[in-house]
Length: 84
Image (tube, rainbow, N blue to C red; front, side, top):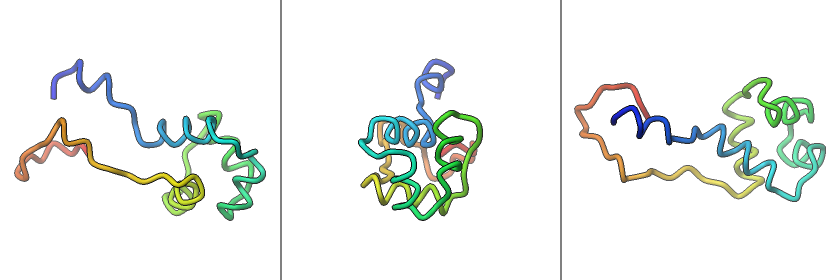
């Protein structure tokens, strides 16, 4: 992957943040349905901090989101660059 391609990659957390902002859920309702504190979501939405993976998973479930592979940048099985 060259430098220009890596600049265009949107992180999973950025995608979740955008999905939260685009959803019809209030912060409190989303927190209640994801069984987490509303301040966790509020601070995540603002980009102030991250969150535990378990919380991330529950938010994705509430928002009906799933992680899928982008096969446009397939790497070989022996590529150990450490990227996802």
